[in-house]
Length: 106
Image 1 (cartoon, rainbow, N blue to C red):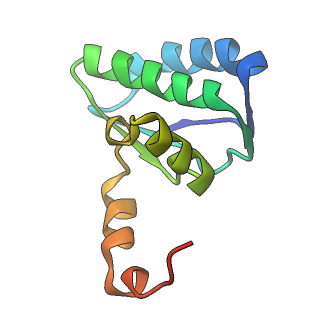
Image 2 (image 1 turned 120 degrees about the vertical axis):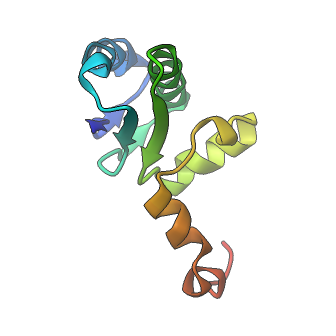
């Protein structure tokens, strides 16, 4: 599993992408990026995720994101790229659970 740093902005995106991209070949066939620690980010974080996706698919691997912060998911939807950043199966199932559906929308 690849893990995003707490801070991922335009200033740190190149270094982050270089480090995570170097780890892609050593990942299992299902590349999962853990975004749970991400607390400060801008749209450059989406660019990093899209680049990692492209790299994973280029290696014949699948790609998913775990624990994407809601603000980033909203930004991805705004840019029309949310479907390119699929959640891991566990996250998707939790979002579709009856308990999750009964929660009020924000």
